[in-house]
Image (cartoon, rainbow, N blue to C red):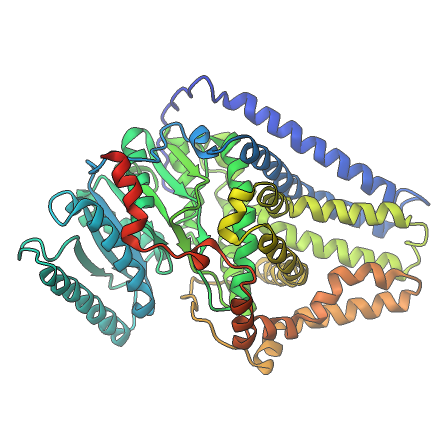
Length: 601
């Protein structure tokens, strides 16, 4: 691995007290763990311990760190959100909600492409450029920004179509400028540049670093965007102003919400994801402070330290690092630079997978990347928080096979008669408490919306939030077991030598045929049928206790077909079920930047 330069970290401001905050958070997580462990003891201990119960308890204890992290972040985030009208201002001291314009820095708007539909990529970029030009003008202030489209497309025909689409896009913007009365020199507005690599060495991380080693060296900052990213001009200008205000800030990560979606699967998934990330990111920012996460896009990055410290060498076996973002962040931590997460959701969006198979495929890519962190934990010079960030990323996926082991041990215990002494009350309490702790980020965010009418109003009011939350919780109840089983099966294959690359994502909503769903989801379905059959053979009520996990596996195929159905999506849209503020009240680009611009003036 490449060496890591270690600098002395800056002394944090007194009011942040990172040691005290982290100790308090650790105590909170330990208290949650002790409560859950006490419930588990009451479930397993009566009647003595069988071998199956020991195995189930050991696997369940392995899931406990992730469960407590979810609940701890959620509780802190919920309390901060309820106590403060603007939690961000207290979490990011240099936060510039109303920036002074124009910005002094030179910023590249860097979009990473690989076999993308340019018809989907370019319109959000046009809205961003329109907003920046409306705020800053087409003169020198606006030209502090340059749009760079960084292509890793390898197919010659696709690359030619991509380049032609971008050329048309640039020409249309020049024509539009002339039609609006701009001079020949102004008509182009913010400059648009295109660069394509001959080889996609290092995947996205290599694409970005190749740019920064070339034309990107001219810029102070770069805004890292994915092909499905959309950011408003107001959000970008806030990030730039905040980065300018703190010269030791290397990455400023904006919270990312889902773009209004056509697919029912996407609509349901990102309604819950938005709620969960709000409290999770707020709570995590409180105790991680300057050593926060980086999620790979919709973030502003300082060019010089990133080039110096975030360069990624291949793994010892020659493979490229797949999940590049978090290791880039922890290397900057180690070098004494700040990485901050801003739990501000306004103006930062992304696309999400349009169907269950697309979602599972994306999870497999992420899982393969996060498992590589086992090889990176021993990097020299990392901070304790940096190593924890890598462990946290591993735990996100490692909990899946552990939950599968809990299930299999429970089935084995039922088949051998070991579960007869299990008390029903404590078992029900444990299942409910564990589920609530894992889903605490979204549950507490829903509660916060219901308790604060001004925050529920953009969603259509408290009743709309309640309807959306109920639909999303049902969706999650059916999705989680399928997702966990899929990840567990994939990680088992990975441990046996299976390898995966970083293939382009499908981003287009489409229906799903029954045959295709069955072909893709037969392992999960077979696991569900076999598990329920085994519990039925065990007799008694064992089958009923297995239903919450096994029934969704049996229903995986119809669940996938329904949530990918265009008709179901149209019904949800008509009913405004799980609608987001952006869907209910879309804001034109020029209007979105007017308030910050006037406030700065």
